[in-house]
Amino acid sequence: MTRYYLRRYRDATRMNHWFVALMFFAAALSGLAFFHPALFFLSALFGGGPWTRILHPFLGLLMVFGFVFLFFTMWRENLLDRTDREWIAKAPQMLKGDKSGMPPVGKYNAGQKLVFWAFGISLLLLLVTGFMFWSPWFVGFFPILVRRIAVVVHSASAVVLILSVITHIYAAIWVKGTMRAMTRGTVTEGWAKLNHPLWHRKMTRGE
Image (tube, rainbow, N blue to C red; front, side, top):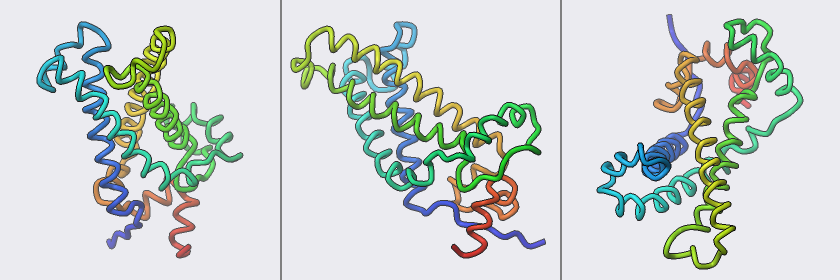
């Protein structure tokens, strides 16, 4: 039986995605080393405490800059619309294994869109607050109270980002055939028709 494949991502987009993923893990592990004393052992991955402190903000910048390219490539397709409300309302049944009532979706469903915007907002907050206590370069421009608030917001944003990435990875593994999109750039026509019927219709019509 012949299998037909649809192009879901260009090579440049996939390389961009994996670069951001690599920078995320490096930034997350180096940041967690300072999040709690019990996690300080992670600093050994970066050459010890001083090197971890030096490298973390640069790793974070690379992650944000990499995501900027992804953001401008994908933001239009991730805008929430009226049909997404129905998807969200019926998501609990889907999580229980019943997909029969789920509305047809385009390239991304509401869950993927929400994760995308969680990425964008949390990374923006991480970028802004990170500069506020980046010692010794920018820390002197902000009063102590502002820096303390920035640390709290930075930490909360990091938690949101990590949880969003965990959700993203889990969903990619849970929906069989999804990983192929970011490893080979294509998906089977059957996968597209089952999971993203409106996008499948658009692609097969040559639009």
